[in-house]
Amino acid sequence: EEDLSYFEDDDEEIEAYESGRNVREDSVNEDWSGFPNAQDSEEDFEQNQSTENADEYSPSISDRCGILVFWLLLFLVSWQSAFFVTDSAVEMLLKFLSRFLGLLGTFDENGIISRLSKRLPSTLYKLRKNLGLLGNDEFIKYVVCPKCKNLYDYKDCIQNRDRHLMEFCHTFEELCGKDLVTPNMHLHGHLKECLLDYGPFHSFWCFSFERFNGILGSFHTNNRSIEIQLMRKFLSQTKVKDFEYPEMFQETFLEFFEGSHSSGSVKDTQEPIKQFLSLRQHREISIKDLHLCDWTASDDIVEMSTFRDETLDTDDLTALESVYKELLGLGEGTFLEMPHTIAEFKSLKVGSVVYGSSQSQTTRNSFVLANWAGHEGRLACSSGCNDVRPGQVISFFFRYMFYFARVNWYSVHPERFSHGVPVEIWCNSFDLFGPACFMPVQ
Image (cartoon, rainbow, N blue to C red; front, side, top):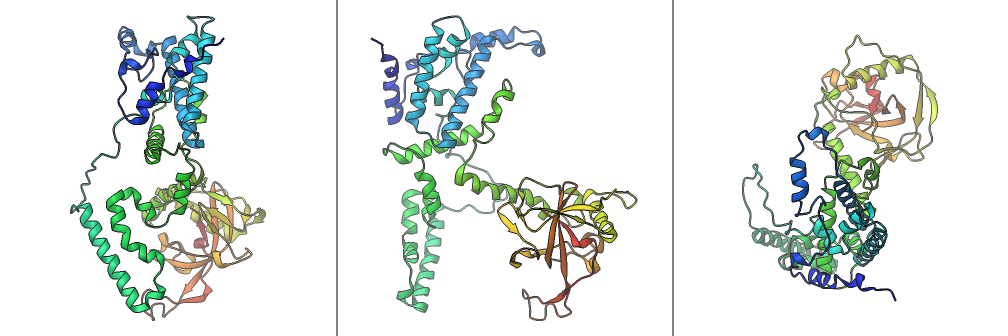
């Protein structure tokens, strides 16, 4: 009869871990020597100190086994976070791998399999412990901001915002009547109590983020101490992203971690953030220093229509050459070989925004506002103009690692500000053709 006691040797530690009690250090019965995060590493330390030349140091079999186990544990934690795998499933997988490798190691007690089985944890608690995921509360930190002028008390801020919300609700009721007061306005009267009871982390409820509630609901729990389990998963996933991967075996294992940092709605939310961070440099740069930014095509730009081959005439090539010189910081005497053929598109998707043209089925998303065009078709950087102008996109095309939009800019009306700011009047006719008609897409 097979002995199944191997699967139940860590029940006491698991119960202590779930209840929040401290587990005695001597309860860990595996041999963790050689593991990168292990505390008992005097033997490896002395061996490294005895090496005369660090460049000629060759990792021992023990070190390689420890690093291999470290890669395996990193993958398990990342895999659990990315695919919402339950703790019990990971626990069973660890126990099976530990027992399977242990049985294989009995064929050769001094072999590699035996060394790996001794270093592989058999419980989720030991996995998190040796990856450093059982530290102190990471939220108890204080950040010093040198530009802060004043310090505000959290409760005072809540009282102040609650007073303004109540004034808004009473004023709305007086002006519009009780029949038009919505349930969301009624909830404004309870925001202060919710923030005081649950803290700022409960603020997602204040604005009815049903999508965030759905993300929280996708996590698997055992319906006991749900808030502790959610916070534990949140902290574990955050720490896994900050791990420094070992240099050894990176070529073999690193591809499994490239897409595991985020998935689903969280990943969809992060893409516009990445796009905004990449565009911030272009928005803050001066119009005269265009060559200091990277205008090449990025992964955020997606072609939304099939392309067709078009031909540029001599005037188009001359104007486009001037744009290239400004974007690349080239002098006027630089000669550029400009082929006549381009790949033209009707629409492009930049991040999460779709930009159309006059050739699209609808022209509503073909109008743009940009600080690019100057006077009489010249570029704003060469004409000394620094003004946002409206225009209509005619088409998009790709050429030499750049996406361009062919834009017709509306002419300036003599009574542009006659109705007062911010209302502006522009002519319904377009400006002269020039280099400003070719604008890079970012």
